[in-house]
Length: 116
Length: 114
Image (cartoon, rainbow over all chains, first blue to last red):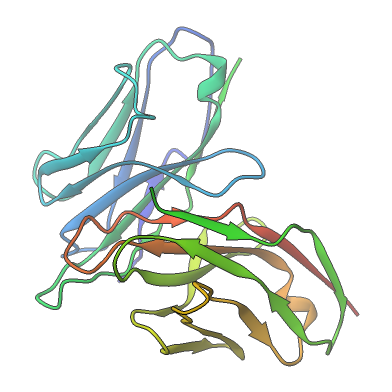
């Protein structure tokens, strides 16, 4: 069990550029979550997948944001036409939802995005 | 909607002092409650959890009890160490069976001096 991994760890981009982040969950975890964390705040939920299906998106997730989990394994989060307000730490978490109906999320190290 | 409120920080303690970090929540139904910790330069780690009223979660000398009557989940440790210096987040997920997205508090920074 290698834990949740995220790439890249840091990304600096210019306003208006597109960026894509990748998350590799713990193997056999069927749920995958994306969160955003700004300085001095707790993480805020963006979206989540159960297997390959995207089941919920936060109102925080504007049309410039899109996430995929094509084979129910790794996930990508793309931000189009980045804005300075998108600068944040983007966190991925995974969990296994079993028959007992509750799950515990394990977080990756995050991708820190800086938009200049 | 669901929310988590943590006491204002930062908190600075001397080694071996007693620690209490307050956390209260607002949620419908019966949420699960969590404490996550973020050590300097590292990602969020689950510290402990409790899934029903009166449950006590514990790990690494930390404890928190799920108090439904006061909607609280305060974190305690009897004797803190320098290595406990970190940011602590209280969080909840909705009742079992629902979307398990975490709602976090703002976090509180703990600094322990030798």
